[in-house]
Amino acid sequence: QVQLVESGGGLVQAGGSLRLSCAASGRTFSTYVMGWFRQFPGKEREFLARITWSGSSTYFDDSVMGRFTISRDNAKNTAYLQMNSLKPEDTAVYYCAAAPSDRLPDWRPNTYDFWGQGTQVTVSS
Image 1 (cartoon, rainbow, N blue to C red):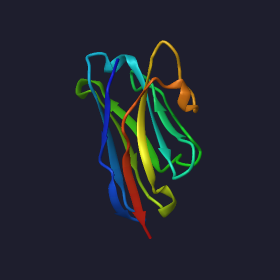
Image 2 (tube, rainbow, N blue to C red):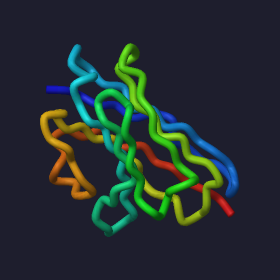
Image 3 (spheres, one colour):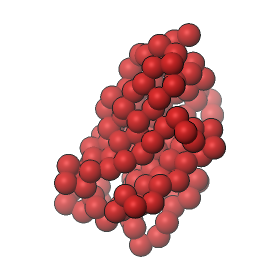
């Protein structure tokens, strides 16, 4: 079991950057694959990025490739999503998610077991 809490969202101008953090409870954070998703009003959650338990492998959706990076610090039980060159269309609620590392989750939200409460990101034009 792991509990996730996102932070770092807020209001930023187009072209700016934000770094989201996902703090995890428990001593087994390093055994989880971490993912980031976002959700637009009235839409399903969409996959953004994934990082393996060791941080050695990352995967990004094409929509954010080259603008967003994912990282983790297992000593701090925290995963990060660095978002650069933000656009108004990036405005959404951003969620982190976790899945046990004995399987590799994909882009589908139901392949992750645990979710944070979400943090709002608003990009003004």
